[in-house]
Image (cartoon, rainbow, N blue to C red; front, side, top):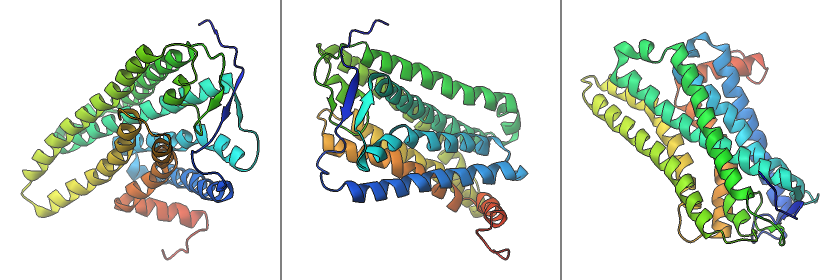
Amino acid sequence: MKNLSVVSEFILLGIPHTEGLETMLLVLFLSFYIFTLMGNLLILLAIVSSTRLHTPMYFFLCKLSIFDIFFPSVSSPKMLCYLSGKSRAISYAGCASQLFFYHFLGCTECFLYTVMAYDRFVAICHPLRYTLIMSHRACIILAMGTSFFGCIQATFLTTLTFQLPYCGPNEVDYYFCDIPVMLKLACADTSALEMVGFISVGLMPLSCFLLVLTSYSRIIFSILQIHSAEGRRHAFSTCSAHLTAILLFYVPVVLIYLRPTPSPWLDATVQILNNLVTPVLNPLIYSLRNKEVKSSLRRVLHQLGFLPEQL
């Protein structure tokens, strides 16, 4: 791809309307980032260390935890650097890499939530065939497929954005390089590309969300057929955490990319919630609603010396 740009670096202006709040935001965002890393690492340790959790459901949860570690790491380190008073400059290649990995990880998580919904559908609607359908080979293929299609989507969006010439303004009115703010800096007509990007970014999560709704409509119908109240409660409890995580993931996507009139301050606020708050909430959602994960977490925390033996 020929690079027509004369801009060698961009300047990240940060979160709109937060001048003078840099120190407070640095402490707040650094705390969220550290808790995100620690929470997801603990979930990984809990799953890996317990043979009872070596099932398809927790295999996909492991991958989600890994991506929840990397997802905020795309934009947070640079944001924390300039909040601490260091340079706001980011190279052209760094900006392109930031956009690529942000959408690669985000798209992969979107596909992963869809696969996790399918896993719950098979477990509840076809329990006798579950081990056959969700075999080790099938889980590997599904996990690799989420990353493969996420990479294709991210490559398309990054190429779409950076094939444009950037020859003048280089101040990014945001805290990281994302499609809407980058298109504003291009020295060319971007109306056609904005429409293509809108369709691409909107169509993928919408398709995944419809598949998730289809899976859960079948799941709810099957649960209602269970005669035992205890059985219905257990089935609902295994799905409620996943549904909560899905809502936390999809609502920001809709607010940021599918609104006709963008608002820089609102977009930044929602994006921060999506980048920092959701990844730190996912370990809490999946651990607090799951007795097996909580039990394994207690063992891990005890081995690390954070909990006394009687707990």
